[in-house]
Picture 1 (cartoon, one colour):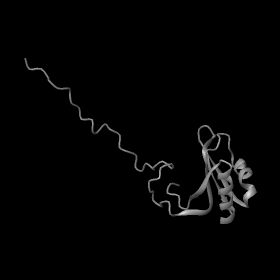
Picture 2 (cartoon, helix red, strand yellow; picture 1 turned 90 degrees about the vertical axis):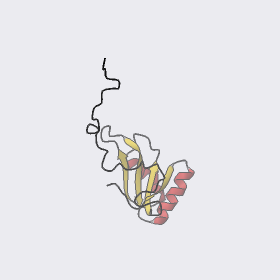
Picture 3 (cartoon, one colour; picture 1 turned 90 degrees about the horizontal axis):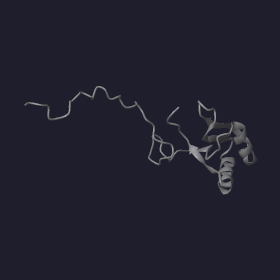
Length: 121
């Protein structure tokens, strides 16, 4: 009696999908990315912990008391059109940006200076 003792072997290597070309690291990790933490913007704020209903207009209202705003961007989910929980506010001066970070943090908002270079888009 000559039966197969092991499992049937298939060549699965060609079946496995190739890894994505460039999987970016999660923004919340502190691992050094292409530009690293040493290059922070002087005027652009990164704000997280935003509710799903947040719009660019809400970011303007939140940050207007601290100085002149050049631009705002609440990052929205393409499918739901809801805020993903974070956004950016760019001020016209470093002083206004610093003031905004300090005041927002003091009021419990998770704000910090954004990275100066953006690796992905």
